[in-house]
Length: 456
Picture 1 (cartoon, rainbow, N blue to C red):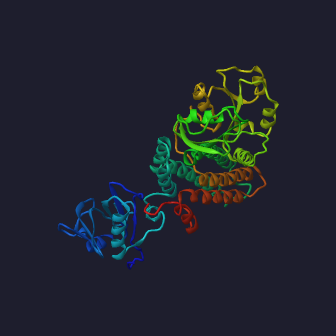
Picture 2 (cartoon, rainbow, N blue to C red):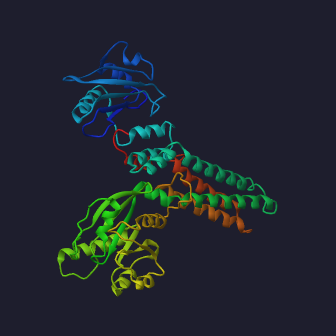
């Protein structure tokens, strides 16, 4: 630890396993001094070289040469953390990277904690909390659309929206507080009306941001879509058709699928977890009973249910019974086997449900089904792609919006004290400030950065 109390940290930044290159990152005031101690290459020493340079050489460890490497030099504030930093690029593979890291740690650095490099980037003011979370979103992105959304957030588009909202609330709060020195009879009515209109516009902006949560939830976490129905209606065939490969076993024997089968796919760039389930029926088989129990559990936890009906058979009242247990806004009735025969009674059964007609065996109607899935998940094609809020953002926005609404109610009451309205706006500002990190505490930072991998 240096006189400033800031430790130099190090970690392997690349994923485990074989690869062309393995990278060890070092950040902190002793980074260049550590490089001088362990790096052997052409003069001058790393600490005498300018930032942005790189040099070929060897890393020496306690047991001799650790690896042949490229050393990259960063000088504060022109680094990810805004500290002096180095990157050591060695040969890929676990052994070489660990040998380099041991040499760095033995020369004065300590092992970085999860997310500590990004935490330092936040504490140095290089990025805010929303951008820091975007780093994790980018790492975890499973589709191009999810990665693009994370990059937009990392560039600051979402932070700008939060900061603009914060400034507008601050202005409204200042306007109210400017009236507190007046007596009740002296408060200009036009000023109160003006603030009330501002709060109405602010409330509308809150709602716009909150509407992006559905898309953000799917991009970050993926949507869970359960395929359910009675035995032999074509659930496993639909799973295979959506995936474009034979993932589930398909036979005419009822009860073939006894456990849930989960697979990932992307629909219009959104990650979706498709879950095939055991057929819903009464069974004396203990194994099948457990599979049916799991099916019912998945139905309560999923974002969407595709309830399949065999369109080639007469209407079965058991479908009516099962449908009464499902939520209409979270269910699409999928009438399968339309290539064989479509039973008109099915149309009567599902007249007030969202219905799609397909042939899973012939892959007919699947594109329409995919569009219907996206619509039910809250993804609207006509809305341009934008940055999306996370669950943490949503929770804080809802809380701050309540204070905005309460402030408006107080201003509408001619007998109420305007100071109470200003107080509620101050509460909203504090809550909104914790979204971007204008206001933060150590517990909040630990909660966010502990989810990162070591080395990021």
